[in-house]
Image (tube, rainbow, N blue to C red; front, side):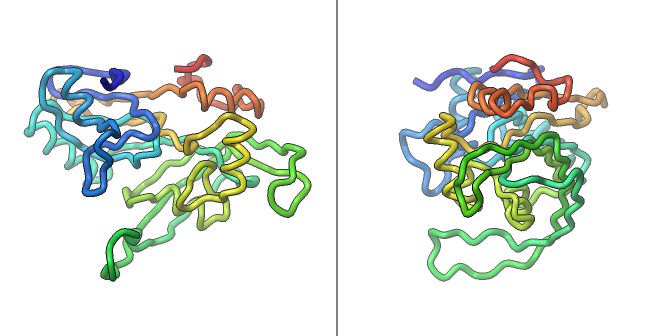
Length: 250
């Protein structure tokens, strides 16, 4: 039986939950039968149908909003299309990130590795702002240097391309720790073996949008889990986090 999801907000039209890393939002063509699915888990938990409004990658944790009826789902999807939703993410990356990077780097949708002879798709606009919140250097040789450097980064995507933050950070040569597709395997392995961190360190911590019926500005926050807090405390980044982030693990 799936564990209940942590509900961040709920009314008669909307619900927001803190999605765990590793949970698929909906069942795809290659979904494993025994892997928990967010839509089904939440339907069972609420006893009613829910409607997806946006997506998070399977390995990304954090706040995700769903509608409780099809009319609300349509209104919410329009906000994403109009780019009127503000999304903020935390990421732990390899290397020292600059204080601020505004990256306008267009990308074609990622190639589906499981399809034979996939057709190329057109390049799409992709814009992300990155802010460095904290840096650390540890006396461990992982690549070719005697020390290893990492950064705590806040990412604000202005567009919603698939894997946008992950691909943009790879483009900047600051891949996310735990990203098995775009990251650095040796650093991911070090975090897993020595820091007890077996998840991708990308977390959707804040989501702001306009309620489709009341017009109220909604700001929803998804707190960090124990794995995240262990890394934050190990690297001395507790005071680098925004004040809305709880100082204790989920």
